[in-house]
Length: 79
Image 1: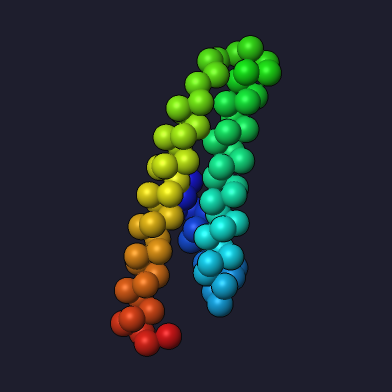
Image 2 (image 1 turned 45 degrees about the horizontal axis):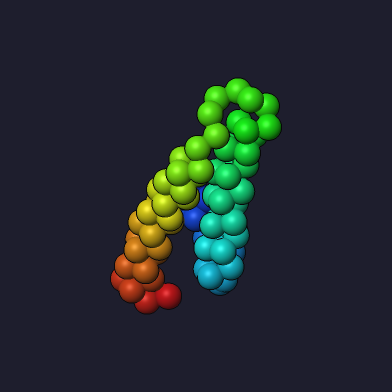
């Protein structure tokens, strides 16, 4: 999830990578916690806050991977 949102954000906002990262993190957080909240409201599944926390952590790992690739790409191409 983090890979997808960070990569698409960097394509849509190439000159504003900080905004792309903030928007990506916000979307990841909303989806992760929203899914758990939906489980709690509907009573289907189980509400586990740590699932949301670990999902957000996984999204951050994916975002970090894309950020490292972007950084080295910009160093190599001198952009």
